[in-house]
Image (cartoon, rainbow, N blue to C red; front, side, top):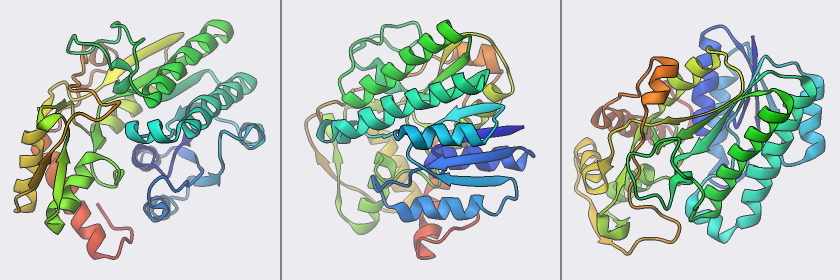
Length: 325
């Protein structure tokens, strides 16, 4: 089986590609290696993936139509897993064009590639951000998702609607997964867990928005990858959406305390008003996902944070070189 993984040098894409190849599957990975965060981390992930004989990497920007068409014209895929995206809620307020290019135009080119190559199955990443504006929790897939409060959320919802259109028009099986605050080793340094770790280690204050009165459904990356693999292995027809989350939100102050415990060091806290585009709480309803895959993301946050901190310390100590996790 040959699987296209877009965003293969990214956080989730790296973990998924490694898992698939460890099970004997061939992976063609695509990434544009942009500088949204330090490309050296992306390159370190790629060096580890290059150790698998079944891995092939293509550096390309999927927002460029010619480049995207060439990928599909030169390769045959059994399944496409589209994880490439421009992430970051706050960044989308300052750099809107990048989000339309990557998350809308880039996804259109992937959909077109699947249509032209008659690929029957597409799995793609959406986000819990699409629920912004909803007051009901836990968030269920059937809840309204028409009131985004950031352009990032709007582009991810647009992707879901585009996938629905292609499923309806061309009989393509599309599975959208709304990820909830994924964290773990090799993660994105722009996300709160990494910002908190770096600041606490350096004795600098951490910013806690909405005066710390926030909750997140933190989901460990290995659970997300397990969910992705199960979706890949369970064919279906038509259009589907699922939440992929732990299902147990954790208060922001409690999460910070967990990091403090793992680091053995107290945080200096700076309490701030809520940031534009942010949501106060996320909480995934995951019963539908369990019914489909037979799997609940269940890694305890304390254990996941310990693994994250251990990786971060080792990675930093080795001068940002790849290491064995």
